[in-house]
Length: 261
Image 1: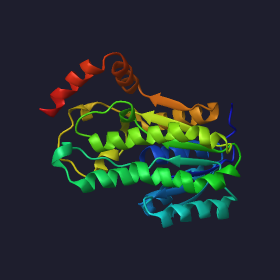
Image 2: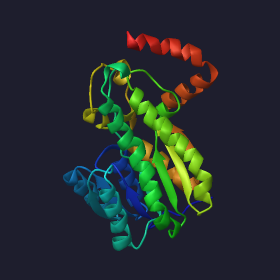
Image 3: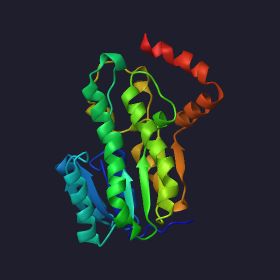
Image 4: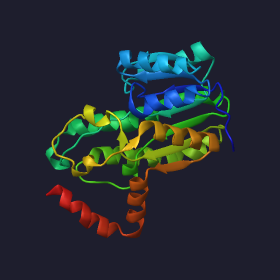
């Protein structure tokens, strides 16, 4: 199925920077009408200006997506401003670095709130509005770490595994409503994501590797939306990690141990 994204009505969470902002810019090339959600209102307005420069329309819905009132306000804004919603992009995410058993319960709960519970509830809340949309679609931005867990980011990995699992489970349910679901699993990207960690209690040895440009990630995700894909893994290193985990998971376990010493 080829999805026409021209003038589509979109809600993007975590849109103030990184992949979310890049997706807004890429969709603006299709003259999309976009609701931008994020905690940094000034940055959202900067993204909105870029969208409108490219021919799209954008409005901002600032706030913490873990709060129900913020989610409902964003959906109501999409309906009021653009007459409905065609695409929901669950992109907001947060992480932390450190040994799991040395961390507090709060770290786990906050990461799960942002990365799993917020998108889960937003899908539930958006379903009636999406059902009335044009070729409706949910895009869940997961991670290659939702395919293979790595040490020192246990909570983040758990949240992305959970998001992928939920996506697989509800995809058939959503199809009965006419709603498609795409899971996009990027690897490390060139963004300020790592500058906003909840906690930095360990040094990540693989952080030195250069990530994919966010513009490249956005183009590939939008292409997958247009193509009607169900899941994509982005980046050569990400695909290699997933492949190795399928072929030699114990060998990969042994290799990962050296990063905990």
